[in-house]
Image (cartoon, rainbow, N blue to C red):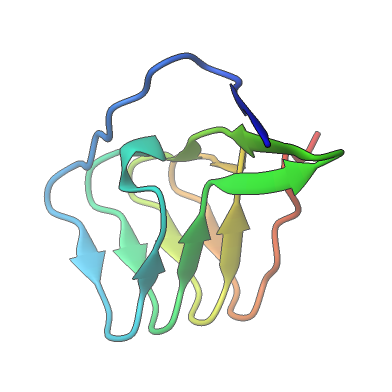
Length: 98
């Protein structure tokens, strides 16, 4: 299987303070870019990879400062949340949203 990284080598940036609720799931920790004062509800899943046409595609999940992610949401490769945005619970973000 081929691996393609759409942004080159990426290292996580996690702002301070970040509030992690119980039961969050994080895959590919090197592809996270969070501003300061981000809040995650319980059970949020962060999955910055997807398999498309036999290729493993990796892209960071970017969340602006003071954003709030509702519980049990799924954020996938290429998701961008604007600073101050409040996302309701149970949202599913598709890979590479436009």
